[in-house]
Length: 68
Image 1 (cartoon, helix red, strand yellow):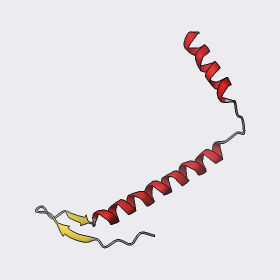
Image 2 (image 1 turned 90 degrees about the vertical axis):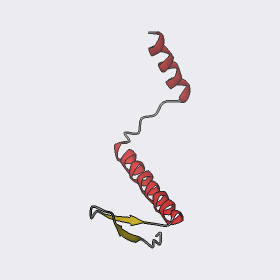
Image 3 (image 1 turned 60 degrees about the horizontal axis):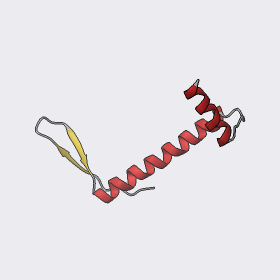
């Protein structure tokens, strides 16, 4: 887990904001992107029906659709 050391500030209209050191922000974004990758992988696994085609077959089908 990323350790963060937030600072809280309030702007001139009273809106509260959070400030993080750049390295902590970047680490937090990287963690979030990793979690999103896991979520997308899990979703793809749930939707996988097991059917596959070779790349050559896919390219042939794609070419046929373009010319078709």
